[in-house]
Length: 209
Image 1 (tube, rainbow, N blue to C red):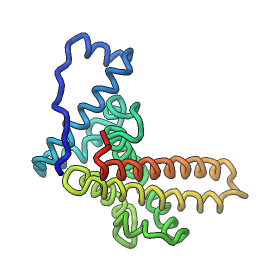
Image 2: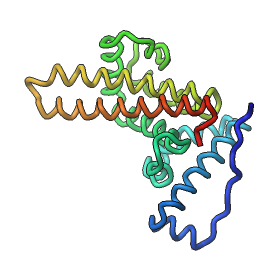
Image 3: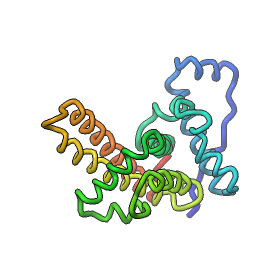
Image 4: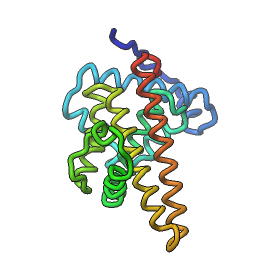
């Protein structure tokens, strides 16, 4: 059954001023949900390749803060929350693809799960392959199975978390601060994986709004 989406809403000048000032959380939440729903519905209905490519590379031009203002403050288990997390994962990858690729490779050796197959990265996975994976996952939100794209993102995060933990363990005795930083990063990646997995399940139930 096709998913139903709300129509985009019109905002008054006063509402926009309130949004810009950040003084009305209810309005910010409303805008986040309406924009995410309208965007996903429009592009998935007519996935023009040029439009999809602009969306995939949006943060390269405008920065992640542009989306953070729109979607970062809503709940994790919502449509805007899921979109924000996939864009965040892509940004983390592109900030340091060499390190992230190392984490990912270490993770594939550290755990024996199907996550490597689910993530779908080319092997061996170097910086170029990990950047390509990030774009593939994000593109899948607009042109493929939305839930599968979220699950690929979750699988990547789990493997990267396992890899970061492995590197942290190696650094524990000789570089304590570095080990602590990597442990925190692994925890954050694990949390992202949990959120994306939950969002994928909700999408399949038609509950992700």
